Image (cartoon, rainbow, N blue to C red; front, side, top):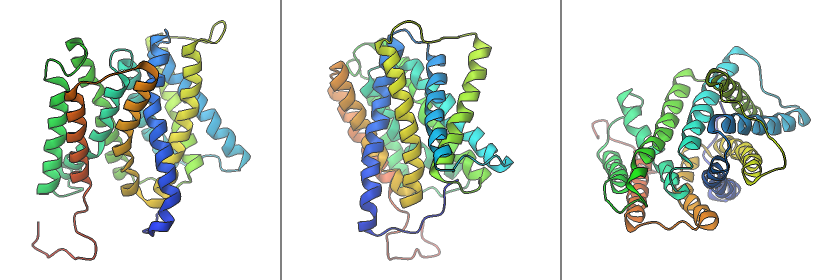
Length: 313
């Protein structure tokens, strides 16, 4: 839903690269903010709802100020609904649910799996072709997952293994979101109205979930650590959703996927800073394998400046 972008020259990528670093810091921070809020007693479903409401209000406020509110055409609303439901509502609910049960740095490893899993899914639906080097990247990514969940000493306790596996549903949901959007082909939209529309519809989805479960929650009494974490998460979510769309508009989706190299590192860094997390050698080896797999999956199908032969795999 972003405007088409021409191939950028290296000097033109300096600003998107800076935005990419800020985006990675924000995405990594969210794992720790989720942990602060949910361990402080905020139920995970209302937490995601209020995070979305706060983020949507921030973006819609800026949109009103700059006269760039979301379009209400059916084609746009359909895109907002899909993105808001899957990439925010469902994905953030999974991450908030597992946040108190798994170290924040370990959850950050899941970011590498989104591009790795997108490749076989796109190939299965004939949006891409199977290629040996990308298949090797997929194997390395699966190997990284195995190093997290199989060794006895990889995690602080073995009780965390099911929650880690559940957390990997988040990258699967991101993959499903990307495939549905590719199929829907929603019309172009600016970063501010698109991000605002996504989070507004995501909040509506979470309100329905909250009503269906009866899991209501409201701010009570003086602000606690969890309340401040929720407020920070709302602001951070508004920022990272806006930056995601803006970076794609400026430099293209392939450039933006490099954020997945940085999110695990920033997630681990914030976890060390806030919770003094320490990780086993298995986690560090898993990170290396996942990053290597991400690199192979992200390699261009044809080297620059060279055309593929008609019969070349």
